[in-house]
Length: 66
Picture (tube, rainbow, N blue to C red):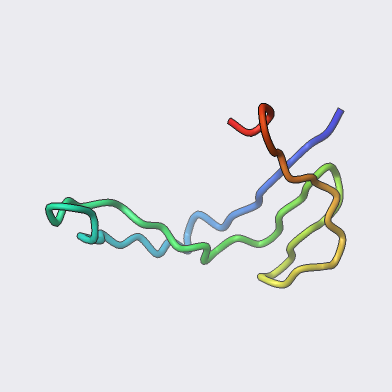
């Protein structure tokens, strides 16, 4: 069994509205500000915006990529 977890500070949010889609359609964009740690398969992969070098996940290719 594996676990992926993302810890985020809800008080830090950088929401913007971009109009860069065809026909100047709008989309809501949220930057990665406020993300404290990213845990992949139980290993800390990113902490305080810096990679730790412990990349426990894998890239999904072919039929597995949805």
